[in-house]
Image 1 (cartoon, rainbow, N blue to C red):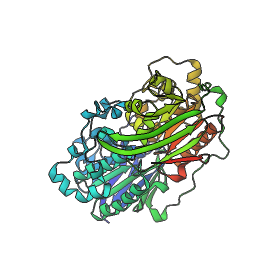
Image 2: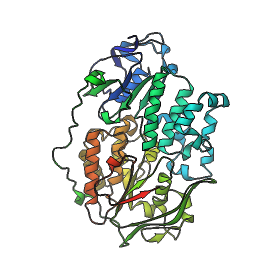
Image 3: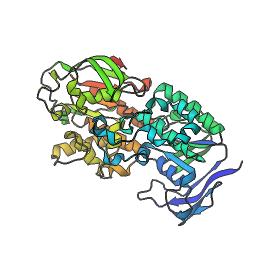
Image 4: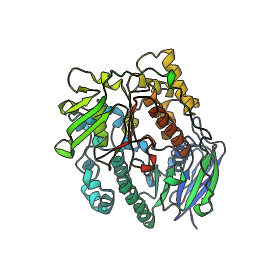
Length: 478
């Protein structure tokens, strides 16, 4: 087979590099690769190395569609022919860095965000008609980027990448945020792309996340390439999950702020809309103290917006028939009165948490429900945050900048942030996005331990039924 890309003794110039040995690897034309490894193993860094985004201290990268890119010669970058779609790729589409999390729910301010239709000129729309149909882009055509769910953004980024007719498409966590139907459609679509001579590389945390069209695997382990070859020859060992149950000492956490109300959420005839477009309506949802719920529904069904009513992020909540913790919205309570009783994490919060602060400070910001830390923490609060870091086995990230760790590690840090108050209500919106099997198992045990406490309430959102905690008793389907 003809080589498509080859790395020969490559050492990229990366601060705090995850690689412990020079990189040697070759991808031939017609092959479809999945790069597999645990969170923090360097998968996304490797994708950027392949994409020519780093200078090299030694070695060379050869592309069949470009001249050789060797040590110290970054003028020959192949970026125009390689598209990498990652969690942060949305920043290349619109200036989300200047936005804030609640802005997506403010109708006046999200008018500054472009429409999906603005991204595709008329001639491009005709060229990508089949792509739009497969990815259901036409359903979000008149929506603003700030209003899209994480799954809808993922589809949009794929369509936008294909607009430039790349030779190689690299997808970091290709199914992240997608519902079951969309995952199946995208899985089939990858076959279509490969048959059209587009080279594909997928970045996944475990074999079960690989698209079905994968023909070859590159496994990263302990900073080195542990396997590189055909999927048929790959021996996938079971993940080394915890040998004994994980225990959490909830006694060190602050006491709950419960005021004795037996009602946590009471929604009556709620409507979800974007401008004049009604997404969902006649929603009735009643959650009592201590209940454990799973919130389910396809991409774009309004799950995140519904949660924003509960978490006091959406201004429309004041016009709804909505009671939180026994009190009707708009009767004198502040948003901080509500937030202090809730722990929350989501893909959308992950997207907007762009503070260049240490992981420890990100976790302690959960005590004050802020994006960023603007208050002095007590010694007790710091001790709790450090305890969670150790519990999640990411204590080594304590002083690392949140923006300089992998997206999977960022999800773990935000998971700890949601738990740091041991809140009365815990809302986890797709908390396992991008996590490897071992970290999923660890987080699941912590969730189950949280739920074992008296009067703790859980809302858990996922598109994967196998991720639903065993102690979930109630289901809400949008």
